[in-house]
Amino acid sequence: MMRPKQIIVFFRILFIFIFFLSTSCVKRGKDTAPKTRAPVLLTKKQESRSPKKQPSQICVCIDAGHGGDDPGAKAITPPHTKEKTLTLVTALKVQEFLHTFGIKTVMVRRTDRFVPLKERAHIATKKRCTHFVSIHYNSTPKPTSAKGVEVYVYETDKSLERAAASKQLASAIVHRIAKVAPLRTPTIRHGNFCVIRETKMPAVLIEGGFLSNPKEAKNLKNPRYIRLLAWAIAKGIVDVCHSTAPRTVTGQ
Ligand SMILES: [Zn+2]
Image (cartoon, rainbow, N blue to C red):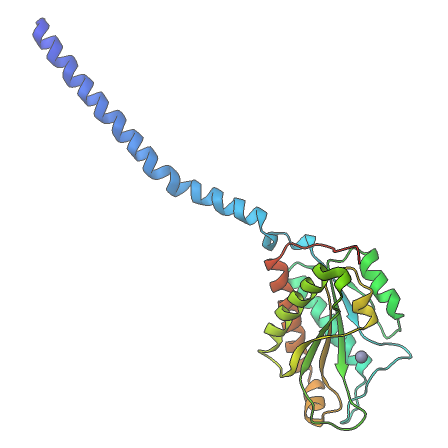
């Protein structure tokens, strides 16, 4: 039999033991919970908010310039590749790369046929595209030393938001192209072209180099060069889509 004093001492020891046990569990709980759960939850939350994980919201209209009865420019060097052929090859490559990034595309044309200019812009609006990219190649009437890529945007006071978004798209593409091809200065220019004027979403028109420059024309007939150019265009589009929420700007 325990005496009352012994009972009191026993319960004191028991109480102290339980107290230490409980505080150590709480501490352990506090230490482990944030390390294992909170950062994971935060990352998922951030990812779900970020357009990076929502490529399905982005739809890029790719416009291969010219086509059919409209050949566009012609390379100055044999085999005198037509602009309409080069634009289609480039556009199809851009589409291929965008698909690898999980981005939807709408092609204005996939074959050698002419699509009226206003119809090209209309296709992008009808298909609810979020971005519009028109691909062309440059030329001058006589052989020239002018070379490099230019990117045109349509600037108007009537739609400052769209003009700003178009410039942002142009900058992202130029940033990538600079790594694979020469640029003409100034690279981003204002252009009153039907396809980028009549579209409702951020739109650019890329002149991918001069077919009237013998050296550049030689580069442009190289499939590897076109592939690099297409990759840079696609990567630029991906960059801008990741940095801004996709949207269609109306009210022009
Ligand atoms: Zn053209």
